[in-house]
Image (cartoon, rainbow, N blue to C red):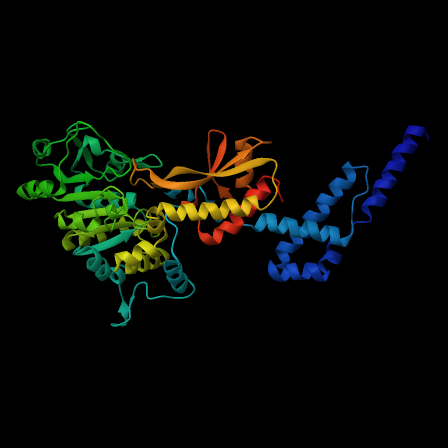
Length: 478
């Protein structure tokens, strides 16, 4: 036998000897610590994890000349890591340090404690979602909230679907399918995510009729467009952008008076759906839902998770006879809300019985109206905690800046705020931002002029310990 063959035979024997040290699957499953994992996950899942751990270890042994730890504790550690990696949820809480309150990418309005408790109470068991407890028979899911909405907004009737785009789609489909919908050119907005008003109208089976110009539309423009095929007039509140300068538009009240003459309905899409006047907090005057209902429009639609401060939903309010038609539209079945959305909406609206309380207990409103002095106090707290640990690799200071309401509301408004500025000295700001996103929980911040900006307006007091720990971890200070 040649020297080369002898070496090959020896290597093969050595590999077999190394592999023989790996414990069998059944033996590992008998380990008490693995048994605890079976109780947590299931025998089927843990058995797969055991096989994966053995397979990973075998591959390392065959590809590495160094000794590989094949003891049961080492393999159990691999099993645990594999289970954690493959069974963690992808959707996770993050710390929103951007200062954008209604951040669409981060889930828009955070829910308050009262709202969450009501959702949990309804979700953990059965509920009377479509059951009339008084009559002992099937009921309507909308009945639970109609009286409450009427009390708060004065609307005759109402219903809720899964988002505002769905609310507009369902309304147009019901009132104008196969007919014309008149809209001002200055109101053909993109709602977000490339969903545009013209597209929504087209999908509803109606024909868009544009009137006026981008910056000026008069009442006569609407009247000239009305004809035998007109199904409705749609007014869209431009909540996510502003046209300034030489402009003119038509009020809802004037459109209502015109539409009555021709016996056609007027629908107004409010978008953000503000339920209270926020101008007292230094913000611009936005048309409220109550004011829009009282203007006489037949239907008003708006979002539930923007300025309203609740869960994702599309509200449809207005004349009772029209609401009944919309409810009866077969498309409603595909767009209707579930018990979680209804529970969140009801709990949110109950808070609005007292608007002063709403500002305090609805997180989105509390953040948007937060005074500058409170952001200043939070910044001092954050800077003090971060600077309590020696960190030669970065500078941390405070500065004046501005927050945004986000979510297509108050698009031109900068809300004065105090922020934390982090200047990394040894790594780039983009690398630090990447590290912040890798923390647990992830920290989502802003970058400007090679510095990280932490805005406390969208950070809760209970998140500050995790925030400061994450910052220090990202900077390698701990």
